[in-house]
Image (cartoon, rainbow over all chains, first blue to last red; front, side):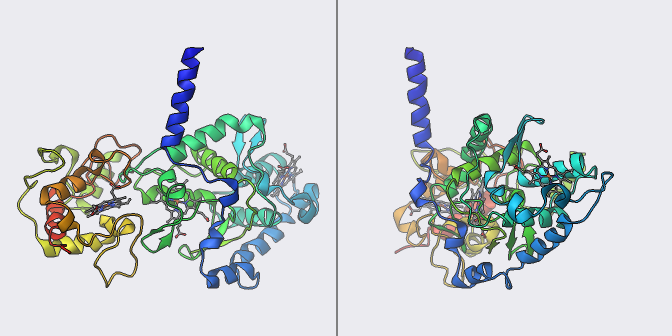
Length: 257
Length: 144
């Protein structure tokens, strides 16, 4: 009993020492840190380049492919109804795999298991397009990821990765995104790192990119070895970030500088 | 497989010391009184401080009017030379975590106790001994 007490107290102390998490009422999307011009571009579908991928995704949704010769729409019908709110629950626990999968992973599972086609490569135009099209159906829906109790150990892993210092610069995600989100790193607003808009169009990339691409960029920024696309650690980080952003509305495809 | 790649990276980054080449230094109180190598050059030091790959002005701002993008995560470097001695500035650059283990300022001349360092940077300090001395030489000139 006493030992358990001591462990609990020391766990609380460490949690305290590694920076405070952002309380729900103070959670802000990265959009709120952008200039009015970039915000206006995001809000106007005719100016938002991410919408080009959404339109491609809509076409792919209706295209029959694979040995099953089926389109997404053959099983899921109108995405506007069947996919509404889905992205707000991802990454979600997959019972067959026994681990969380993110939205792109989920789409690839349908490609392989339902359409009997080959999985799409990470950051391929087609996978980004389908993911953007599905995610766009959840615009304005508050993030709900993480309520499934089976996810708890994976969220805990993601949190640990977020807190841990790494790379040649020896920084943890928390040092910037919990402790210094109101500051600037050279010219860039640091922000709270809520993944509200993915896949999103980054002006620096001149392209749409996934959340995994963004996380890999932050890891290379601190000169750490980035996890490979699809690595369980990246999905765990995505999962922790989404559960940490609970309640913030989705806005895919967003724009970021 | 990693052998030739690593060699390539080392060739591409002359001036970066390998792990086993770190110079020994003596900490006295909160300072390293003796230079790590020959005395540095303040002009080169200023150029290094504002150079993006040195990383200083990602966090700091300072008397660099020509630099459009400077950080505000850390104190303004103006006046560093009035607030700190040369030896204190040297230890701060070599291993800021030895002064404050919660600091976010990286240790520029340390290769141990780091996790998941990317292959291009593994086993190398962020700055060489010569670069540290150039920056120290510059910082001591920042008087208020």
